[in-house]
Image (cartoon, rainbow, N blue to C red):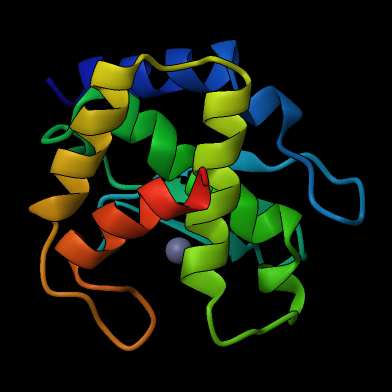
Length: 147
Ligand SMILES: [Zn+2]
């Protein structure tokens, strides 16, 4: 089962974003499954400084394909915007959400219905923390990004 979702995620990744996900230094961003992370996915740097997106297949399994694409683009956005290279701003999460959804919509990668599915998934994602808006707020914010 695990491998099924990894495959699905990789397919989404290959067909869309990750091939084009490059950090500001021009280094392509790798994607690595990691069952230990306490989140759906995480933008990070490897010890050698290479940009990477860790994703947790167990958490991804509970989301729709469009939502997986959104999270992939969200983590890619952290790299593209330089957040992982020390460009820390207060609203990093909203910034990454907006770049992700604008990219997805402008490339016509999802339908209106799939957009609503992403919002619904975000909505139930919950409580928020010091940097993430609570789920419902985040879903509304997504709409605002497109205005
Ligand atoms: Zn984030």
